[in-house]
Length: 249
Image 1 (cartoon, rainbow, N blue to C red):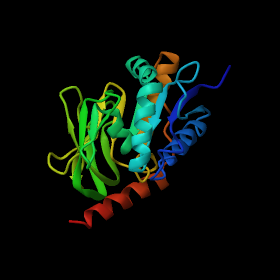
Image 2: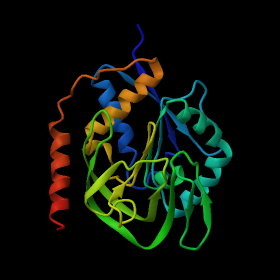
Image 3: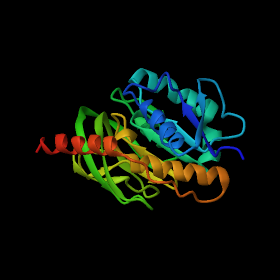
């Protein structure tokens, strides 16, 4: 019997990895392998369409503003059709920071230019005058595993949600999508966008497992009950992030 495997399409791993968000990939692979499962990593480079055979989980991290602009054009030209088909067909999406902005309808830069996005999340983003920076804590009711999420945010974008997306969570400490409405991130079907990095998944193992469970279900057409892992170090990192955020009060 072959080992159950998640096929992960990592978009622009060189261009969009400014905040060590590649660590999210390491967490996904590690949590699968600790359970006797596996990860098949496929990199989405500039100019390349979706890999043959499809993907169960799509990941796009954050990058420098210049890289993000360059990636945006390639994303629309070479990958948008495949991404809409994958995510519309039940594959899982995780879009972080700059990737989150590109998952929306459009991003308006500080210079006044409009960058068209994928539109897989019903959001729009406009660059603000200053950056929203610091540790962040939020509560999430993401089903079926609601819980607390922690991370670090560093973004100038002010993101607003449309009616087709719900917030990933409500901000307890920090700024969130725009510093005003206490929302953070966006979710539509099984596509998740967020400004949380640092990276995100090492400090939030429950979210990693939720994404993996969805991805396995997409691959094999049935639900997977992932066995619990010993997460003492992960929980310690989570608690330390909460403590840092609380000290900002």
